[in-house]
Image 1 (cartoon, helix red, strand yellow):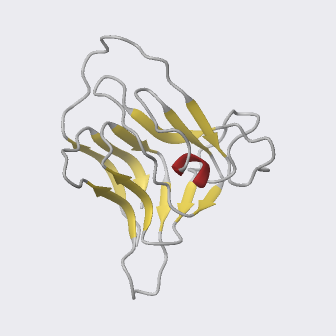
Image 2 (cartoon, helix red, strand yellow):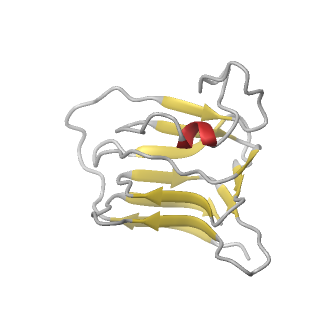
Image 3 (cartoon, helix red, strand yellow):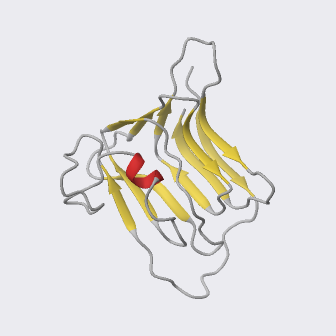
Length: 156
């Protein structure tokens, strides 16, 4: 079963930019060689683990997955954007085919205690035999308020 998330907004809408901060772009291509990977377009990270275990994401940061490629595992970034500068996770590269994340556990994407994140233009799958939980996107807030989560144009 395929569900398309058109647009979901949890919390407040984006406001005016009142001060730009330095942001980082991290590229991911799970079919690329891991040798020399630094997250640049020329040497993208070769796994979701590089994002999950890397430095926390901050306001205006972007994680871009290469169009037409697939990654196995769970994308579980840490950090938070801001109302004016959310963290964006989406595609880069030529073509129209969305990057695909195929979960190998409960979640394809897990956002835990993260605010001001936008997920856009991804395909998320989580096959299973029906004996355990399987989710495309898992939003989790434990002991704190989470705001500004946008899910846009996802195939789940």
